[in-house]
Length: 473
Image (cartoon, rainbow, N blue to C red):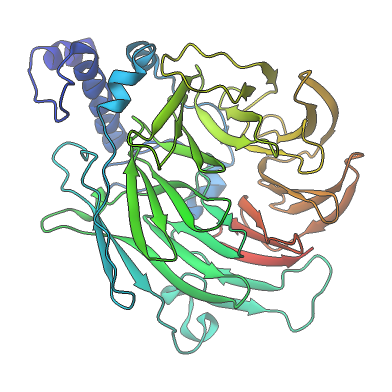
């Protein structure tokens, strides 16, 4: 490693961003390149957030092996990057100024939008995005066979709703088997967004029809492995804007009604793992522990930023928009106030809670605004209810299983959790007693993502078995 470091320091390389010729940014660029190159040679570890240079990304077929590992253990620490970036957020992030992507208006033709403002990885051509309307396929997946499985192709459909059984099972090919991703969300209008590889599919839960998908377009001479995988997505509260984050740190806002890319926000320097909207404000968190607050209406959208030492794996504003909760890979749950108008990285959380293992499954209680639930990972497996103001654990229960996802069902006052090994179930818990109400069985691998429809009468789940289920609640 020391030889590699000396060899890298001895070479002067061009920095593609205006005003970033200082030693800090060059050092980080070299650090990031070495990490990516090493990942390309060795392949990713379980739940790694790094791109793999085209070798492969972990799929569900490796799940049996991955279950022997600490699937939700913290990834390698990136101390050099943290030291370089701490206290220098403004110069690092604002240099990557926002770009308004080219809007396209024809409603019935493919829409290509180029993300021009954010420089891509070195030697990688600029990537565009294409909106494509859904084409209804004849027949179903059972007739066509699994070899030609299409996104949201119906595999099974129940004629009668049975307790504990899914109403419908559909295909979700290329769903990334990564514990730290957030790839499923349902809008207030019942529109499902599901990221499959480098594409985002929109499915209407009311009509049960595929609307279309957002797909990256290969530029001439661009290798297929340089297409960016989606690592997180989130609907705005009014259901009009979809935010997507990539494994290379790009954030894009998509106007679904007009079918056009609105803008590319100032980028993170690592994998974008989580989003949360506060009215018109979008908060995003990345693997390096940076939280950015962006207002798309502002001339310079980045209006605030903070840094925590641990990598972000979950992010959510409280129902009253007073507090922001961030879950980390080291098992720390930070509660931040809404005074985020700083770019120095010196802002401190008002409360911090600790649990063993990463906090990826996390959610605020909709009807008790100071209450938040967290789910423990592979080494923990406990479901906990916290008082966010005092930082105390109110109650907990041991699920004896990895908790991958968590949602509150407000109508029935249930807490819904998606689990990994050993049983890969969805469980419903009564609140506040945390008594087990029901178990939903249908996935054959861990249930990575959960979402509920607007009136909390149905559960949507996406698993590492590359299946999407609908359940009646």
